Image 1 (tube, rainbow, N blue to C red):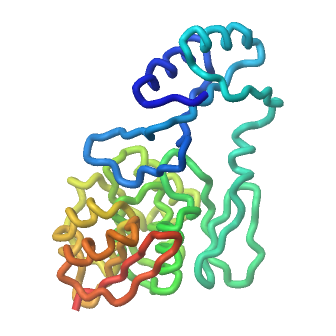
Image 2 (image 1 turned 90 degrees about the horizontal axis):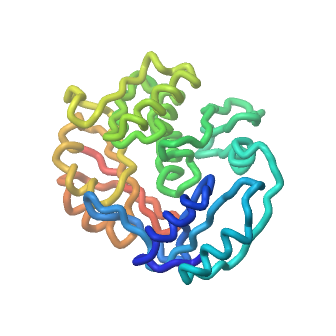
Amino acid sequence: MQSAKPRLDELETLFWNLEALSVTLEDAEDHPIYEPGPGEIPVWDSVIVSALFADTVDVQKVQIALTSQHFECLAEKKLEDRIWEREWLNRFKPMQFGENLWVCPSGHQVDVLDAVVMELDPGLAFGTGTHATTSMCLEWLDKHIQTDMRVMDFGSGSGILGIAALLLGAELVTAVDNDPQALTASRDNAIRNKVEERLETFMPDQYVDRSYDVVIANILAQPLIDLAGKLSGLLASGSSLVLSGIMVDQAAAVKKAYALEFVSEQVVDGWVCLHARKS
């Protein structure tokens, strides 16, 4: 079902009233939204709305209801029953980042000599390693983390970056996120990987300022610009700052916000990961 924004709420409400089990929105025209403004919940200009119903639903009744409200039904399909949780997980396979680091979902194993394996399944908090912004950070960690380093993971999401640092030998990781659900995911994933004793989690207004050997933040360009003073202040002399979640045309503005020496950058699929060092 395709809908323009002004009638989106009306269509969603109609599906729910028809006892849909779920309603999903997709971009109909490949116009991605990368960085909404503060407090905004944006939606695409043209949207495909899909509804999932129980097999007992009266399909004709649904079609009549949609037609009467002047909505166009693009397609309908009957789905065979299956274990949907497993179907979701089956999309994910072990992934290698750098020379030694692997992210491995349930039901899989990595038989590689000297592999550093993180067990992680996709969950409600963002971060499985599949996105370019995350994969570049993981590759950087694989190359640079040394034993006894202290790491700040600002905007931790699922905890994937902090847990990777701990598995690679970091002494302590401080994970900070403004979403309590993300911090819960970080703690749960740390327990799963047996590194929970070296992970501490905080909301942004709760952590104690200290110096770190590495500060890594995979969020978005404007928050990284706004946080420049805070993140720079967490660096000891000679420490590294790793910034990701930045589009290519945003990199110059992010660099300008930091009074640091940027020593390298990596670009994948239009996204940039910046590495700066405090002299």
